[in-house]
Every structure is written in structure tokens, then in C-alpha cells.
Amino acid sequence: MIRIFSYLPNPRVWKALIAAELCGVDVEVIGDKPGALASWLWDFDARPLEEHERTEDSPFARTSRRGFSGTLYKTDEFIKAQPFGTVPAAFSSDGSIGIFESNSILRAVVRASDTDHGLYGREHFVASRIDSFLDATLVFAREAQVYLLAAAEMTDETYVRMSAAFEFYLNGIEQALSENSHIACDELTIADIALSCDVAQFLRERLMADRLAKNDFEPISRNLETDYPRVTGYLRRLAGSPVFKKYLAETIAQTLPEGP
Ligand SMILES: N[C@@H](CCC(=O)N[C@@H](CS)C(=O)NCC(=O)O)C(=O)O
Image 1 (cartoon, rainbow, N blue to C red):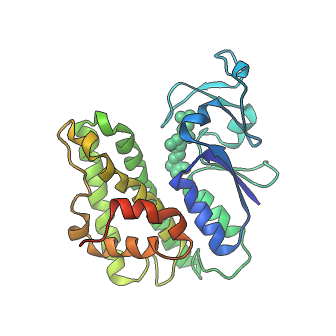
Image 2: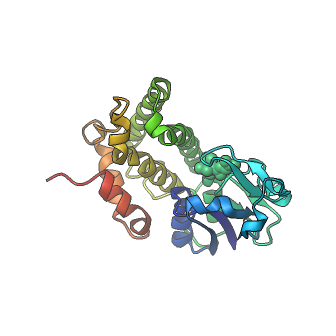
């Protein structure tokens, strides 16, 4: 069993949940809405704090760093297991080992399975190729995180960085899809799972068009369908497939609707 603590829903957690369903691993998710997580004690045994426990002089009080503002409450044990203090935060079943970074949590899930799923490739070179895509996806997702959090206060610098990251990553993915039915090979792997969740999250910029327009910016992905037709078809296909559907169908229907 793997336990994950996070705000919910969170596309970074969907990665682990999709994999868990595909390869039969038990994943327990604990958490709350993004706004509510600041009133939780971040720990292996995470729990909502009572109001009187949420004080600036609490031994658990720490300044948030990314995606949150103000104070968060994290135990020393949490920081020992999760040195960057981020969510999603995963733990081995007894809580003794912390796993962070959603792509690594995804890897942990498939490694815990003893079924013949092929999700991490069927030989070590393919597994390493899958890692290559996971790394490239994280670089893209990190840029996307900064960009999406900036939305209404977008700067030229953030916009230009995101545009370059988008073009670099999408070109590579479009190219890979000209060779194989899936990203890393001709079989579904965790590279497809990570990519679809992170790109679906990025495409939410299309729903923020009004906020971007306030500073005269347009969604970076506005020409995705024409510039990256293979990626477009692949995302729609994945979002309609069993298991993925449950998590991705709504976001992809909103952001990548089929034409008339
Ligand atoms: N690349 C990481 C991103 C994790 C991350 O940055 N989480 C932020 C929330 S979006 C966080 O936990 N921040 C905690 C803090 O501000 O202290 C992943 O994929 O897991």
C-alpha cells in the first residue's frame, strides 16, 4: 500500500491513481480542497487542525514556498520524509520512506505491482527511454506551474519562457508520435500517464484566456490542434480510454473540444 497526501483534485495525484488502477496497486489518498490544506497538519498521519492549533507560534508552522501563500503546518517527521515539503507527498505503508515528485510517485506505484503490466517498459533500455520522457515532462511541467500560477499577473519573461518550453516539448512529443502509437514505444507506459496529466493541466490556460487578456496575452496553446495534430488526437484518444476517462475526460472536453 502507498499513501498519498495532497490537495484534491490534483492532476499530479491522478498519475498515481491511473497507474494504480491499471496495475492493481492499493493507493490510499488523504487530503482536502486546495484552499483547505493550509488548515491541515502535513504528516504521514495528516489531519485537519483545530482552530486553536493554527497559530504562528505553533511548532509546526512553516512559510509556504510554491503554490500556497502564508503559513503551512508541517511536522518534523514530514520534513524528514519529504525534504522539499511539497505535495503530493507519498509514503511507504509504514510511513518510514517518503517519496516526492509526482513522476517518482508514479514510478513507485508501478514498481509495487506484481502483475505483467508493461507500464515501465519490458526491457531496461525502454525503461530508460520512459525515464527520458518523464524528465522532459517534468521540465515542461515546472515551467507550466510557474506560468499557471502567474495567470492574471503574467509578465513578458514568464510568458516567453513558457512559450519556448511549450514549443520545445510539444515538438518532441509530436515527433515521437510519428514513430510510435504511444510516447515511448508502441505500448501504454507511465510516460503517457505523466504526459497526459501534465499537458491536460497546462491546457487549462485556455480556460484562463480572460485573465491572460488583461495583460494582452493569448493562450500559448491556441494553435495546438493545427500545429500538433498527432498530440491532439493522442490526447483525445487517451482521455476517452478506460481508466484515463475518469480523471481526464472533463478537462480535455473543456480544453480540447472536438471541432464541429
Ligand atoms: N514537481 C512537483 C511539484 C510539487 C509542488 O510544487 N507542490 C506545491 C504545491 S503546487 C507544494 O506542495 N508547495 C508547498 C509549499 O509551498 O510549502 C510534483 O510533480 O510533485
